[in-house]
Length: 374
Image (cartoon, rainbow, N blue to C red; front, side, top):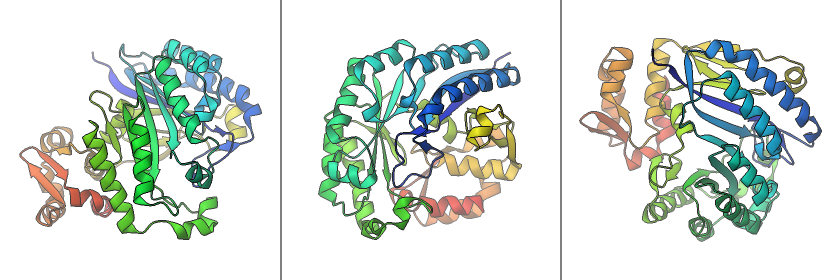
């Protein structure tokens, strides 16, 4: 009997310093707890293994926080525990996020030898001025050297995160960031507009009033699409571009509705049509609270809405046949009124079996998604 595909996400909540825009679950100045946290994580992995004997792990992703604050010995222990307790596919990619100032070539070589296959650097910008504005600890040359070191250590799958629409950033400024990235051995670029989240230092800063307007924001996004396409990067998801064969397989799982298990503090899971979450309390987690708390059980209608909303994020769009197979209903019988409205307005397009966002639709995607959720 074929096993059920599963992705594993592992959260590492430690940072040397929180960035001014960050609202992720992370803690700065608490690296002294890393040893205790890794010990708890190993127990967390072992505790849940019995529930997933019928699953095959096809992607693993370490996110944060700053996973690269862990030593290579920590990753060795964690990966050994996962391989002991779960069935991994032969081609399972293992990815991790890293901050440029936390790595060197020797460390990256150790990770590569452990089976780490993909590394994602939080570059954000190649402008020292903008990096300081964002509260980043690295400088532009640090990011450049980190990417080169990863390549030298044998990483072929390297992502760089870039943020645009920064305070006082011009279109020419952002073009320099894109040009700098394209000079490096990078195979994947995630490119996001800066968003101001409530409760972050940025939200209470005068810098929030210096963000480019919507027209400038859209011009930067259009520039990213144009330059990355010209450089051979395929635009496969609203905010993600990749060279052929280097799409992020782990994130593709989220967008296509694959089941996933979250391990570590505050990590989310989705399986059996249920959304679950670990505790956000660091002391409780280190103390052994690894419970998966049920947040919601998705109704058939909610599952269909999520299929459409997440699938439309991909430039390949959603398959009418896949919707029929998964839910036993025609997509137009469920969402016909909304789909036909957006098709008529030129925000969606249909090509036989596929429905995708148009270029205009991408710019209005949040509004479109909200209507399907309703």
